[in-house]
Image (tube, rainbow, N blue to C red):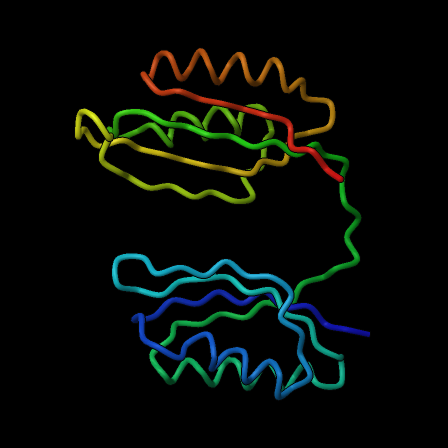
Length: 176
């Protein structure tokens, strides 16, 4: 039987962070499942999902936590994988508009009211090609309750987008 972990990390960006983690995982017969890693404002941040044989899990845990002495703020949590999944539908959200405070707050508040879970969110600010104004761009993957009408959610988000003067696109995600 395997034990699952989710590791979060934050530290000063420097070469070798990913390699150090991968070395510890491999040394303890662990398996790197999935991850989201990024450099943000000179810091290295991320999430990693790891599995390991139950007999090696404690040693893996100790090995990973030992990396904290290398300047990483690291947290490791064992995950109970026996919980039943609830039925959901996946969707993607894209948002583009002139940057200003509060856009993300307003959009995520509407998603929360609808019972939608944001499972991935990427945002950035960039210069508009013609005008040079700063644009805020957000891309998200969503888990929506199965009973939620995506068309109704789309209409509500588009109306909110008009109020915020941003373009919002919501699409059902194709699951193959």
